[in-house]
Image (tube, rainbow, N blue to C red):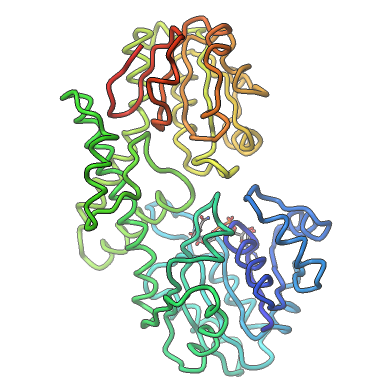
Length: 436
Ligand code: NAD
């Protein structure tokens, strides 16, 4: 098939590369000329494991192209996939300006039958809006379909090539058939629904996962107060098949471009339909608070915040999760900001997200470090905010030597007591007893 992907961000680029890998001819389009230039020159503008090799392979086979010419890309395609951003508006609602612009451009480029697929996460009713916009600009016949995306940054290639399910929301049998063909080699779990249900499946899935995270984080907070260990609790819960073990890792809460935005958008969608989604509002509030637990533990160990003035605090990890350079809504943004407000000197290090973080939060107090060890030098404490693999392999005897005080506050619960035997470390985590 000939496919155009409009929007070459985390979703559009990974999807485009993977559709090419399936043997299709794919043209990825973006408005950001620098991004397209990097791609045309053989680079990859984001960090995503396995993506470069797959992109190189398909570029060499001539199945993958990049352009900022939407008109030409759409004209050459049978399937046009919209994967532009849907960032939060001022009240948390999804901002649809990029979707609407893409729909206008597609409408203007139509030169024959095509299936227009909305892959971006959009409120119920948006596909109909896209249909109206395209229809208002062309007499050509086309169909519309909602195929929401469930990939996770950091494992996006694997998630796209081996998805749990593909959801196709479409009314037209021709569109359903074409999209089934496109996805059939990926998974037998293809479900076909009406368009509105497909749009809702995406929000409901993310809201449910966010709920699991906030739930276990509240259990963790209670565990700390009553002397239980949330890791044991989660293991015991997760063995129940009705619950399952996933998304029960306590920590400083979720971030990223999806859960924060999609939970708020669903609260708005419900509100617009006169429904007060109380449970999800609490999920969002719990998540917002959870990251500040790190600060509370710093206060409990180092002393009140006024005593943080001039003190160095190592910050390990800035990305919202490991294996990505994405810092959108990362807990690290609030934590580093709070440290700065209290006069501390954050010594930050992340294996890949330093530049992205600096573009969002740059401050003269921040020390930008080249290694985890450098971030620990002369620090009163280390706050671990992202569970990067390299942190798991830390030699704490070496780290202890360079710190002013061997204190680790682990926001992701990645260590057990054995990591610190033979050291003087005092170790705090989330929902588990401190030791050291
Ligand atoms: P992104 O911000 O990384 O990329 C969006 C891209 O679209 C940008 O490069 C932007 O320049 C481009 N764009 C905007 N308008 C355009 C236009 N008219 N023509 C061409 N390009 C245009 O966003 P993302 O993270 O890839 O997310 C895209 C959508 O997918 C969102 O709705 C998001 O909620 C959803 N989603 C994201 C993820 C994720 O993990 N990032 C997972 C599932 C779903």
